[in-house]
Amino acid sequence: MYASVSRNLGEGLGSLWVPYYTALDPQFHEQLPLTFWLQGLAFRLFGDHLAVERAYSVLAGGFTLLFVAMLWRSTARDRRYGWLPVLFWLLLRRSRGAS
Image 1 (spheres, rainbow, N blue to C red):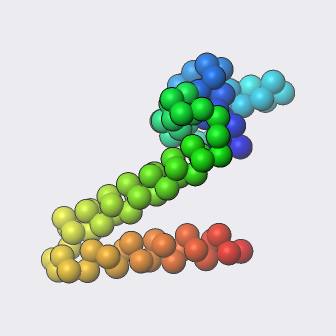
Image 2 (cartoon, rainbow, N blue to C red):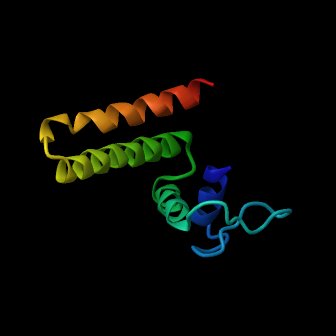
């Protein structure tokens, strides 16, 4: 569903503040629009392929993990354990994906 909204933005349907989903349900306001805009830009630059969607997901997940580790290291007293919240986040994602 989210890739469809991003693909529509990449094709020029809708806008950043009013994303377009389908003709029956044209406006989509379920998530933050920046994500759709960034993924729509990727679709516009590299074409409408499953590989573009997968690469975007891997990059977005990688940046999220990096920011979680950086935030932990900037606030924790012991910086050696910056990998710990990343591990917890990955375990949570894995358990939600398995169900």
